[in-house]
Every structure is written in structure tokens, then in C-alpha cells.
Length: 347
Image 1 (cartoon, rainbow, N blue to C red):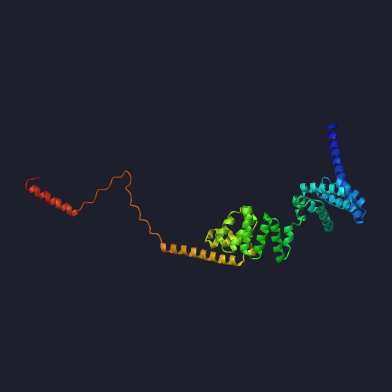
Image 2 (cartoon, helix red, strand yellow):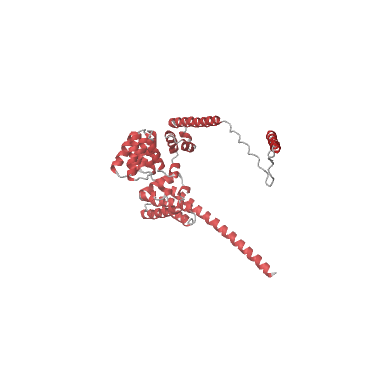
């Protein structure tokens, strides 16, 4: 009886401990949230030193919550920058980059657009661009030179790309950008030229192979276009759905109709009405009808098959064969010969 009572008491103690632990966690979370809100209020009121203290406490209490920790570090860095504490800003940014590289929680952090904008400016001004780009979740914060040029009007964009290519003549990035820009302008030969130049530097570059294939397909050079397409892996072709349309057109052009049928189902809806695709579909349909008509005609010409002759009846095993039926005429002749021989005494 005492053992049962002891067991019951132990269970009650464990349950109470669990409840107290959960209550403690809830209170700790509530405390951290209060510190975070107090820091935000102090920051808005430009009481930056107070904000720094509040954000530090909130960050310490959020070490096991990467998303919340990111938010605390972002706000802490901005408050330190506003208080002109450069060394502290560097230390906080380093801690932020370490956490972000491991957990990538910045995108989910509860940060207002103006806070994100201010932090982006701070980060870009204090951290090397290569470091930021090395962290996938932060790469979008950096606008590359290529992205800046891409937003320019067509004439200015072309000049800017050519200038960048002259400045960095060995850069495949600019060769591919120039090829893509030329293809967008309908200049397939220039697109081919720049893509080929990129491939001379990086023979397996998928962007260059895809661009050159598209340029050649647009000019009707389908044999060469299909070679470039074949050099791409299945995943590389799948990630560029526009290549399905070019593959389809080229397969029809070289009369590889079976391959054309296979790829036709992968043509994106927005490219199905492209003039060369529509024309290729018409040619494929005509070929399919021609083949169907040829099969039907051949089947009709062959006609029904002649029935095989029935096999001869076989003699039942173990049964003697019946004697042949005698010929009456030959029998009469034989009897007459026998009588004549008897009459002459030669029997």
C-alpha cells in the first residue's frame, strides 16, 4: 500500500514539475517579447541606448529561436548604428551572418518594410558583397551590376553590356547577357556569336548552350540546334521549358516525328501559339494522317487470309489397314485366263 502511495506521489511531483517548466517557458517567452517591444518603442523615440539594452536582453533570451534571434539582431544593429557604435555594429552583423548562414530565418522575421530597407542599406555598406552573396537567403539583398543593366532601356542596355564586356573580356557573365539581349531583340546571329564565345571559355555552360540552340532553331539550323540541346542534361532542359518548343519544331523539321510526338506534351501553353510551333504541329498531324492512311491501304490490299487445308486423317494406331477394294473387270479377266490354261492341260 505504501509503495502504491509513493508511486502516486512521484507522478504528482513529475506532473507539477512539467507544468512549472511549461509555465516557466511561457513566462520567459512573454518576458522576451516585452523586451523586444520595449526596444522598438525606445528606438522609435530615438532613445537608442535604451533600445540597445532591451534588444540585447531579447536576443539573449531567443538563442533557441533563430527567426526571433534574427529580428533582435537586426534591430540591435540598427540601434547601435544610430548610436554611432561602429565596433558594436560590426560584431552584431557578424553574429547575424553566422545565424543566418546556419538557419536562414531572415525572410520569416517580423520586420516592417522600412526596417528591412534600413538594415539592407546598413548591411551592404558594412559587409563585402561577396560575403552577402555567399549566403543564399541574403543573396536577393544585393542588386548585381547585371540586374541593374537589365533594367535599362534597350539601347542603353546594349551599350552598358558591351562596355562591361570590354572591361572584363574573359567574363562569361557578360557574353551570356549579350547573347540573351540579342536574342530578345531578334538578332539571332549576334546571339549565336556571343553564346559561341561563351562556350569557347566554358564548353558545358548550360545557359550558353540553350541560347545558341534557340538562336539556331530560330534560323532553321535544326541539326546544329539539336546537337546543342542534346548536350544539355534532362534537368537542364526541364528547367528551361521554352526549349521544348524549339525541340519540337526541330524534330519535325528533320522528320524525327516520333521524337516530336514525345516532346509535344511539354510545350508551355504560352508558346503553343507561336507561329513556328503551330506550323510544325500542322506538319506532324499531316504525317500522322499519312501514316494511318498507308496502314489502312496495306491492310485492305492484303485481303482475308486463305484457309489452310484440313490435315489428312491418320490411321488409328494398332489397327490393320483395310485391303483395297478389288476391280471387277480385272477379276473377270483373271478367271478367263485360268479356265483356258486348265483346258490345255497346263494348269
